[in-house]
Image: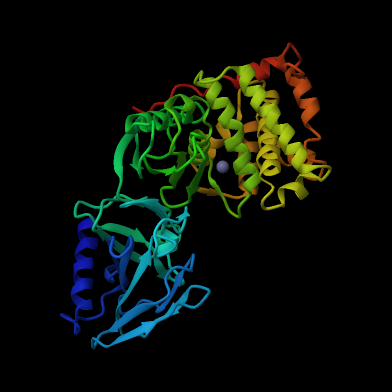
Length: 473
Ligand SMILES: [Zn+2]
């Protein structure tokens, strides 16, 4: 299959160069793919030279999904005539039907003087760069399920979300161009293994106190903690980019998962962080925990962030990185911050505020806790929230709020999700917090959190236990 696709690519290139202009139009399955040739160059400043070869039958409408940095491009037609094009402000570009190749340069630095830090647009130093695929790739304005693309990179070592074939060619679907994830150019590499899964890591830039081994051990620990929530690491292969933040000693400054296929993770790490500080880090495990749930379409940030935030505390207890008391301290402190950020609004109103992160993350985490407790209560301990994640994983990479709820009800063996949702969303945010903590035997004293016997303290203690050992080898 891969050989066939690669051969089609060569045919495509030959056709684009005019060598077989009279070749008959191939049927759809054999149609030449869209071809991207990417070359990293550092002169005069770091950038990517991109050449896009559209096939004859491809639509000629293209789009920069995050426009801004490419101001001009040169289109060469089949006769060799060149035209200069300027992308529209909305990123759209329409090229003539006889276009052979579209060429442009994507500057990785924000300004010609160098430097500049933008997680999506370009971030790095020297010859090590981090950029989102959607920032630099000119993509078809519309992709169809059967659309194929091929991509090659030269001039540096790259780490893209996908695995290249034996010839170094990335064989992509049209959808991969839209959800193109995070990309790394240059830097050092390590591989982290978890069961049968592998995390390919790009280390971009230099750290004051941290060795590559320190960074990769930290990611290994975080990957291990994911298997305290799911029976095995959720993807056979994912890529992780680690980018230093100068002048910062925070271990995990910021992290993000992009929904490429498979998802790609990037983590910003303080350049001056120490290995010891990783013991309190939550960013790496939080991002990896986003791999344990399906992508919610449409987006339901409070639920996905709530799940990752809730499990960040549980996973670190189950791995013995923190005590149960410490986890409840973190959870209750987070709930308090969320409550302060939500004020007297309903949960529905508070989470609708796009940038109210504390309210979104922590009201979602409270909901996840409550859901886990209710699942265990109604099934007398036979089911838990992890079982919902395992079930959803068998149903594909995406879910809706409704299909998530249906999976909860299946695991519960009775309707549960909508009733619980009705106790949270339309009510003042965190209204369920105090009774839930009381049931679980969690008391907030001036000196810290006290765990005590209560009707639900057995359920609380069971939360500390992970899933049964996985069968990943
Ligand atoms: Zn998150």
